Image (cartoon, rainbow, N blue to C red; front, side):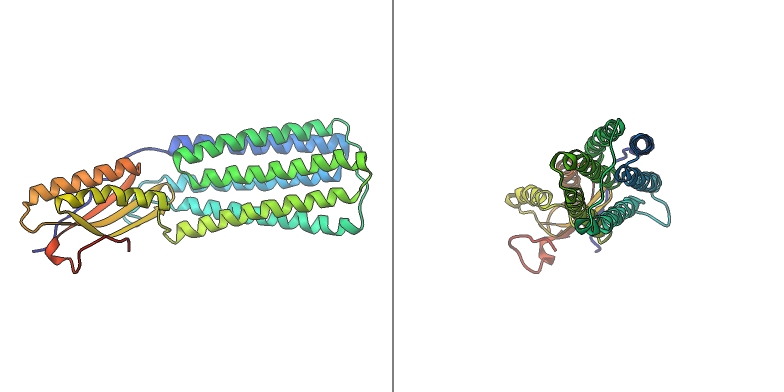
Length: 311
């Protein structure tokens, strides 16, 4: 007799409106930042501020791409994509990581020659205030997006927040250089600060691209979540219930948990069914919004007994 499989319907929770609102916030912030930085360049004539303004167009491209991917990710499951479209967010994360690498490369390409051939910086005027305002705006929006990403478990919003923070670091480096060089007289300090900023944001780009690759390759849930599931399932051992083949994976905002539940062979089907409902409910409470799939088998089919393992 074939073992029954029980898969409860996934918990319905719309994220579309919220993620779209935050994506629009990111796009609006990018447009405002471009305007402020172009004003900073216009009133100061600083090439450094101009390059910082042009880099903000990269932020706008990232925000627009993130909005498109969030729209796709929030589409419901269909015949061709029965598990949904949530992995689309990883494309946004990878794209943002790539943009960060390009930005860091451009900074290094410009800054390294200036270590040996420093260029005199232009006077600031009120341009510095425009640049500082754009930096503060990016910092505020980045923090808002970061909190929203953690709450909504959005890979795309998290990538957008981290991309904005790289712009904050870049702009801060430009401002520090424009202030420090006239005070110290060290013309090379401008290039040195730019190189430090570029190296810093390279690490952020690498983290985003690694996260994107891990999600696309069905990376398991974080170890802390897996240990939480193990601890929950171990509680049933005293009732003669074991488990095996525990598998977990991330897919954008969605999380999946699959396992076999092993019960004594003399249990009634309704008792076993109720147990599966209970286990799925408890795992769903421990790992919010996880889609849990359990497969029922009698203990007699288990080739070995002992500590269950994750496969």
